[in-house]
Image 1: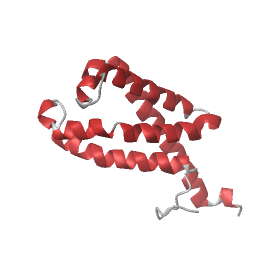
Image 2: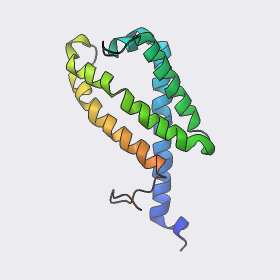
Image 3: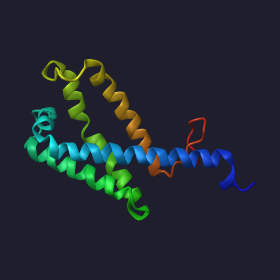
Length: 143
């Protein structure tokens, strides 16, 4: 049976497609939120970052551009690496929210705690997709 037709290859391909759809939705919705809920998003920006409104709008624009880049094979790799870098860049906002949980009473504390491991998972997913979705079923990355 050719490798492309092997059940584990088909499974990886389906997983990669599902992961790509999830990443697209995550960043498309998140990017839109930056424009629809700018004031709320600005509260998340740590105080040491200058121009919080600009930071929110620029990061939202990059989320939307990254999501759009995922739609085309020719730009998908750059979009995945760009979204990886952007996800790292917004880490201070997630840490800021957790450190000042009382300032965000509408967000359950457990959600703030889970946000950081979820961000780690999202970074792994972006990396896995950028590398071609070549993870073995065991979770070990193929050469």
